[in-house]
Length: 527
Ligand SMILES: *[C@@H]1O[C@H](CO)[C@@H](O)[C@H](O)[C@H]1NC(C)=O
Ligand SMILES: *[C@@H]1O[C@H](CO)[C@@H](O)[C@H](O)[C@H]1NC(C)=O
Ligand SMILES: *[C@@H]1O[C@H](CO)[C@@H](O)[C@H](O)[C@H]1NC(C)=O
Ligand SMILES: *[C@@H]1O[C@H](CO)[C@@H](O)[C@H](O)[C@H]1NC(C)=O
Ligand SMILES: *[C@@H]1O[C@H](CO)[C@@H](O)[C@H](O)[C@H]1NC(C)=O
Ligand SMILES: *[C@@H]1O[C@H](CO)[C@@H](O)[C@H](O)[C@H]1NC(C)=O
Ligand SMILES: *[C@@H]1O[C@H](CO)[C@@H](O)[C@H](O)[C@H]1NC(C)=O
Ligand SMILES: *[C@@H]1O[C@H](CO)[C@@H](O)[C@H](O)[C@H]1NC(C)=O
Image 1: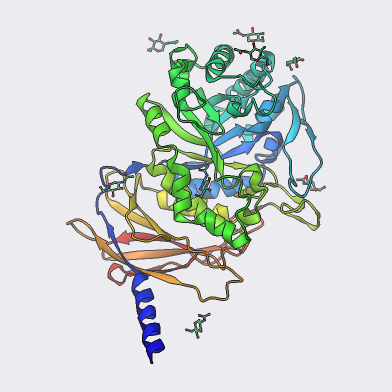
Image 2: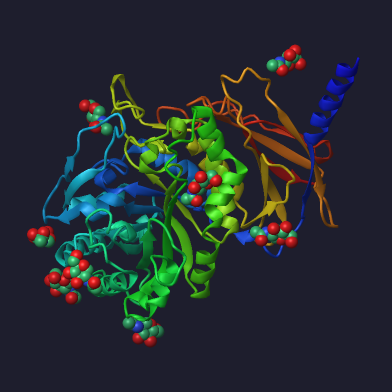
């Protein structure tokens, strides 16, 4: 008898804990953030860059995958091309094909970065195969301290963009000089006593030359990105935006042409996170996403105080291509990407460039046929055709939520597992909301899937919406590698075009909604 009473008590408490009241302001709160249609953008590892657009003929798969995002959000994702191999690149005029030297694949690193890359004009001209209207930031080699190499690369980048017809709308946003210079002392690029002050001096000398070569000036649309550091010590004496500013970079002639500070960040190595389910649950959890991004609050403030934009110019889940943790390839990464990108916008992060390389585990898109397993580097029995990976759905949901709106704000939700965001038109009217239930539901759990009920209230007077369409990102298990659907449709198709019958239901706002564990939902409100 006693045990029955205790059991029913626990059941009722658990049940109550699963109904949450959410208040949604009808007009954009003053602290809402504007959000760009290209909020989710991509950083491409330079060594195999031409695989993405296609070296000569257009890569239709990649083009379709990016066009899906452009159609939903209203602008193609922007690209930053560079990263580690940017600093291993040299230029040889007339070279038609990229000359690369790769270390052999290993179980830990099935798709290593090239140790050396030599490129010609054709390498940069491949950008002509990008979607019309794509904005590009390109990196030049700084680590080698070979000004001739940087000068030739910058000149070829500029020539490529000058050669594109105006109708292509392709635009060179910025040049980045060097990748993660704060790590140069660890990887042989600079002596151990290399300081931020020396960095600023060397950067200024390279940037002076590059600014005249491209050209980059007060009246050109092309500018410089500053920083691109792997980390930030947030101080005026170290590698950080604060350190750049304190050492006078912005008062130099080329430094005055920096319009954006770029920061790189990964969610750690993932080493030692434990079982696959623990690693996935860690990554997608609400606290983890918030903890990892909040470290940059002072850097964003310091950057905005100078009137500059702040972006995550290279980011993704666990670093080294997601090498150490297979968790990156699993469906939970879709919810991580969604929550991570939306939360970042609230901190004043203007855009995120999710890092992609051929065969990297954490990719949103695999651009070409793979012949080796991305998990352990073993030869595949059947080649794996170009395909999207689960995180791509996070980008799709984000693009659709942003589409035709202009501002976003976080909803205060009394839950460790549910996060929520409201989207407003540029005029400040509520249009949509996204909710993410990041409680992992795993294939081996043996438990029943939990669900959270949300009761929706509008937290101000005015004409409240009475109906909402409900579109769900359905995921079998957080550790599935495929089989996700968005409104009943799939992007796991041979050409990356959406397939299947759209399934969206319309219901009364007053009924609220249930969100099962490991699912995201987009609500679109109507009266
Ligand atoms: C915006 O304001 C609300 C209400 O004052 C607050 O709960 C929320 O934390 C603020 N959000 C941000 C990103 O500052
Ligand atoms: C840039 O550096 C290159 C290589 O040293 C040199 O040939 C070129 O004249 C320089 N350009 C300018 C504008 O200083
Ligand atoms: C610097 O780059 C130029 C241009 O590719 C090359 O000719 C030269 O050998 C490089 N210098 C060094 C020291 O590697
Ligand atoms: C930094 O170290 C190098 C040797 O690695 C030395 O030649 C140089 O003088 C040092 N510079 C300073 C400022 O200490
Ligand atoms: C930039 O444009 C302004 C206003 O048109 C002009 O005064 C200035 O000389 C231009 N600067 C350069 C470097 O061309
Ligand atoms: C991200 O969050 C996890 C969990 O709190 C933590 O272990 C990791 O160090 C964080 N990474 C960064 C770069 O802050
Ligand atoms: C896989 O093999 C095919 C056929 O040989 C080739 O076209 C493709 O480039 C290979 N993929 C990679 C990533 O090397
Ligand atoms: C799952 O739910 C069913 C139906 O309510 C119940 O019979 C079963 O015991 C539950 N299983 C677990 C593991 O809780």
